[in-house]
Every structure is written in C-alpha cells, then in structure tokens.
Image (cartoon, rainbow, N blue to C red; front, side, top):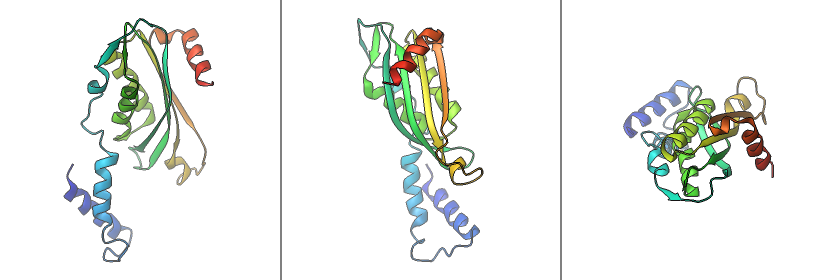
Length: 183
C-alpha cells in the first residue's frame, strides 16, 4: 500500500471540497486515513486458500453451519461502508475446517473494495475450491450506507445475497440451512 499516494489524494480531496487543510482538526487527517486504509483494505492481495486448506478429518458429513459472522466492507462504487452478517453452511466430505477459518475467509473478501454479490460468490467458490466439501451455501445480509446516507436515503434496508454450490443446490438442503439459521 502506498501511504504517500493515499495522503496526497486525501489532501487533494479535502482541498477539493473546500476545507482548509491547515485547520487543526484536518491537519492529521491524511495520515489517519492512510493508516485506516492499511486496516480496512487488509484483504488486498490475500488469498483464502491459507485459511481453508488446513483441515481436520471428521466422520460427520452432515451440514456444518456458522452463522452471524459480522463483517464490514466498502462498496467499490462509492467507497461507503456496507456491513452485516454472513452465514455459511457446508456439507463436509470427510474434512472440516477450524471454525475461525470461515470467519477469516469472510475477512479476506470484506477487507477490499467490494460489492456484496461478488463477495458472496467469492466466499462460496473458495470454500468449494480449497475445503472441497460436497456442497456449500453462503448467504449475506447487509445494509449499504450508499443507500442510507445518500441517493435514495432508505436506512434499515437489507440486501440479501446467496450462492449455492454442489449438493447445496438441492432445495431441500437449502430449506434445512435456512430453517437452521432462524433458530
């Protein structure tokens, strides 16, 4: 990440909106934004493979669900936050992954400029590619600040996306996943 370019861009932005870049409250803002970018864009260049390839043998090949994984991301169209919950259900094929690894996979994709639809598919595709389950379903429920604080201004609106792969394409398995989420 090029901190100097970020600081220059923030300085130009502040000047562009008519703020005084020498004002006390603004003077350190370019450096603060640059430091923030290291954290909120930490997923740039990361690969979920490192989290999903370390597996454990399991006799249970029934659905495993991890729900309510909180995430925060930035919309690539407006660079405004969207945030919510990710729910993941997968059917193991003799191997399971440590539970924290699913949340870490979510973070890989949430911590980059992103759109929810793409993030949902990326998580599902990587779980299939690296964990190699029989099937996976990923559902994301999120609120988008680009709809809340600008444009249509509809706070509280939830966008729901989902992706299904493998055996989870069976609607009975999807129904079971959704029923278990509601508990």
